[in-house]
Amino acid sequence: VLGVLGVLGVFGGVWIELNCTTAESIKNAIHCNLSKYNIDLEFLKKNLVGFVSDGASTMLGRKAGVSALLLKHFALTLLYGIVAIID
Image (cartoon, rainbow, N blue to C red; front, side, top):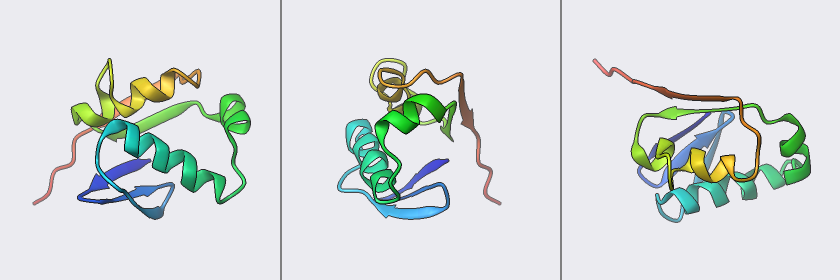
């Protein structure tokens, strides 16, 4: 799960710093941080099945969102946008 809060994000429970909040930058941050844990692109191609984020167009945009960029590399079967309600 990746969520963006300003220039910080969380992926799989690990906080990562983002250089900027464009879809390309977020995708690159995901790849870079996963490689720190020896999770390479070949492993992801075989095992990554879904992507969940908020419904922001940067995250779920059909043409240039993070999910669209991930779909170019991975056969994702689950794409979800969630709504966060803060009271």
